[in-house]
Image 1 (cartoon, rainbow, N blue to C red):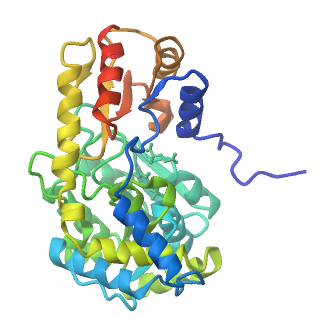
Image 2: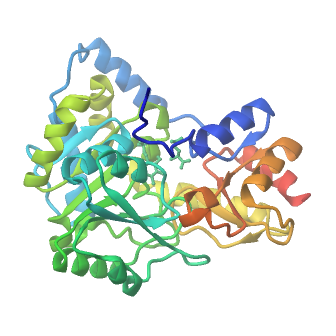
Length: 379
Ligand code: PMP
Ligand code: GLN
């Protein structure tokens, strides 16, 4: 008999909705990925790396050239030096970085505070290593933490807090003050932090990304996780990294070396080359803000209520003026009957609380956004 280690885990909502979109030939604004190609130059450089012979194992921590350019990027953007030799690990996407960080420090009975709606890979990893996830519900429209409430959830067993800014699925961001409060709590209660920053370069309206790297005492306790898939429009490559101080990185790498050992070598060589041109990531806020604004403008006369996203490539839409159905039923109806697939957000909430909000991904070609808007406006 199989005794499941994760009895409550089922297929992710991203797979469910993308499959439903395919089955019903619907426009897929559900799972978060672009429908436009990533830069051909990047693919060409992966090819060149393969031709140049980068086809065997990369070093366990990742290609040194890539770690060096990540270190430079973090230094210039957030004023924090991470040593490429000891404090940076290249991973198979942020998912593996998050899993590995949790595996490295969470023991049986440890409590981990997560903010709901939470990205779905945190909780299963916590449980798998015997930890207990302690959700704190964020609420619309702002979806920002109440730090007084957080204090009330800290117990002697609390070992870690996971934050995500810009935040999937709400599009909210943490302010400098939020990060200072987090820092104070983490220091006072001796907590580790995972700061999931996969959307660090997708932030709008001139706001500054408040990376945990900017805060000295916080960075000493933090695993910062990042995703090239999100930054360079190639989610299928599954490339990312983890920044953490030396002692934490050492523990992280003890797990990493027996989990994957190392990740795709030619992609690392190409990414190292590509990251040298800062425009490749500094242009992203404007690029995605334009898409957000085009989409919002296209549906401004619809019956959906819109709170503009502050970051990520997601936008929440409140459909309570259109239907009183639960969000899963509404998302299913929208996909099957109208041909637009979205993500119901209750699945990420504590006790699946339903705010009647669906998430759309606007990382799409203008023609896709126009075709979807036409349908949404008719509801
Ligand atoms: N964290 C968040 C908040 C995400 O939205 C995602 C999905 N990209 C990930 C982590 C995982 O990133 P990756 O695809 O690089 O594993
Ligand atoms: N990060 C993507 C999203 O939020 C999904 C990735 C996945 O399918 N696991 O839509």
